[in-house]
Image 1 (cartoon, rainbow, N blue to C red):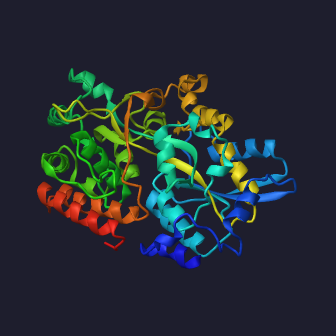
Image 2: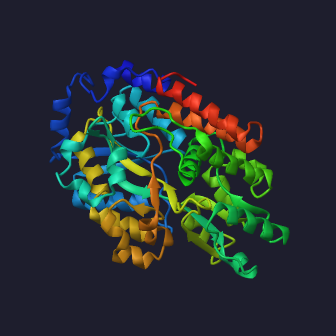
Image 3: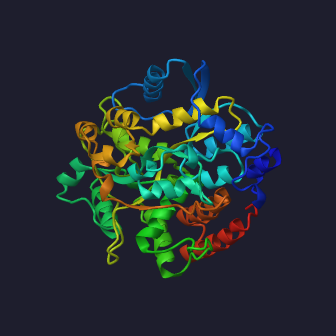
Length: 442
């Protein structure tokens, strides 16, 4: 089993490891699931690997959840392990730890892109038999799909995340301009405000050589109507639509609408520039609303609006958002499987989902909470408009997703920097995808 786990880190995972957990600590899958199905009556201690959850009112959201859980389960104590702040960093760190058979953390918060990788390499417990039959009725279909690998569910929903176009409503009003409905209009609007000296940057986004850029590329390709993989998981990226998406990324920097330093930007970099008043528009995940609109945190608080992303003229497609978010995974090597599974289920419950709507700057995973009293009281447009978005998934249905992501973000970054033409970038991405899908390192 340790061989299969280490393989995740090299990309040379054996197909025989898919969905199998037999051999973990000398226990087979049936034994592990039986343990996970029973909440312990004796005292237990859990560790939860969790990154900082954006807060609306300054509270530490993870601590609020832990206290609520411990009130319901006074014999179980939960302590936090502070995770890293980026998806790529977290994936590498937790995979390395779990590959050695560590019993901790018992539960870990992971990106919605992880289930295929972690399930294939036996780093997560399959949980579908540990959830009620009607469990998924309360959550978006896209979330169930991204949580499933080869018919097994490896992640329990916690919160989702979507992307929006954040904008300076004061600057648009000053110039008598509307929120752009197309990328072509956004380019024109940006240059108008920039030439007037009212904004240093027109459009801030993320184009560093990381997963951040893969999410952006996924959206731009969907805007243009270009596919990455077909229904059988084969690379089909190419053609005029794909080149239109790559050309837009190049045009942002070539025309000075986006600073060339965007090629080094991840989410926090773009957000920091926007909340410090350096940009007119920002593409970022929904949590950026809290940071951009909070006095004392943002220099532009009270001057910011949020809208679905625009699309290309003539396509009829707008409001595309990459489907994102974080779910809880259960470590199959945990010594407290029953308590760990109960905690993962609790985080998906209505009680915690309503807590997230009240206290956290994220989108609750439970659909009914999005138009509930707590969400309306928070007044967060990224929550209230979540149903308006067209969610698109990254090509995560392969255990080689890290290589697939790299095949997209590496040439895309070169296109943004101007060292590769859009057409050449598309060709390089297609060839990289084919190599990645064979499980070969890039």
